[in-house]
Length: 215
Ligand SMILES: C[S@@+](CC[C@H](N)C(=O)[O-])C[C@H]1O[C@@H](n2cnc3c(N)ncnc32)[C@H](O)[C@@H]1O
Image (tube, rainbow, N blue to C red; front, top):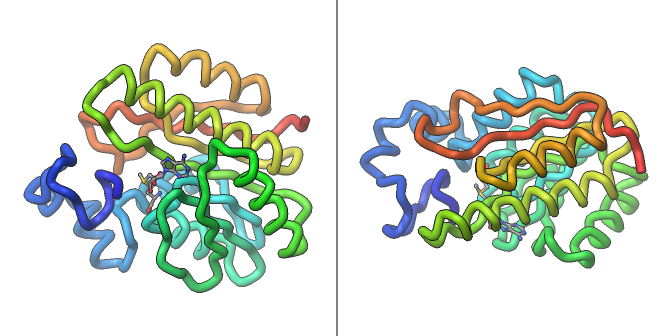
């Protein structure tokens, strides 16, 4: 369970008392979102015009499902959302849930097969909020975040259509410039952005790639 979701184990750094004074946490509960992170995707998609009606969206690191709820609402009845996580995601109307590790080839194969079953040759947008279980070892946590972001970029490079979009979370670290450059190589426009809903003391940033240049 991530630090931004609602049932927090004691070892996580964000204390429940902090959360209860957090306006995004309160708003997420009031609006029926499964995580406060839902507001990050709303802000990212609005600012960068990422997800539109009818799109096929792949949501990586999706549990408990806040981003998938937002993506589902944005794509509407004619769109599709495929959500992937190591953990189970409780079912969501209109969302296909796959359990798997996004760093593994077989997961990419399974997502591709699901897209085809849904009558889509490629995704319009790949979104990733995947984050490692924090160990408290900053270097290790930063490296694992980089690995997950790189895996998300691999999924996007394989499954997003030419002209499609990508957004992923990454912890700022020594690996960040290398990652940003690899997104820049593959997309027409690249930006880094910290949504308002990201905590002020958080090292996370979202890298957005718009207009996939193709394989
Ligand atoms: C911050 S949470 C995602 C919150 C989600 N966007 C939401 O709004 O509900 C990060 C998620 O990344 C997942 N994750 C971490 N490593 C992963 C991996 N290798 N493959 C798939 N999911 C992974 C975790 O299980 C966790 O559920």
